[in-house]
Length: 95
Image 1 (cartoon, helix red, strand yellow):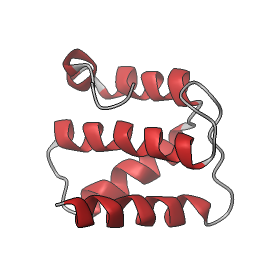
Image 2 (image 1 turned 180 degrees about the horizontal axis):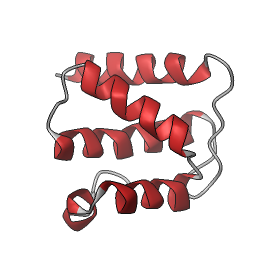
Image 3 (image 1 turned 135 degrees about the horizontal axis):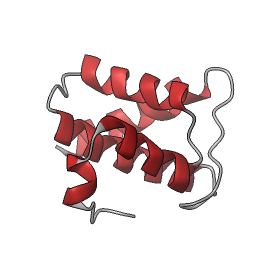
Image 4 (image 1 turned 45 degrees about the vertical axis):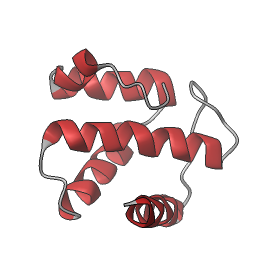
């Protein structure tokens, strides 16, 4: 999906957006909710901005794991937090 995120996808109801994440990244609902909550806690309270960031993070995580889009992304114990922290730090440095 890359940086061209479909604006219609971002406007869909939560279940449809989650199903996109499930179909493209094989992401389970618990991991999705954890990522969403963490981004919200970091100040991304606007849903569209948060969804963009979720897709960007999933693309980043897929590349980090050498999986590519459409492949299963695995987050072992503590790994999600580490990858998400690294992603957020890189985003912060880019600003």
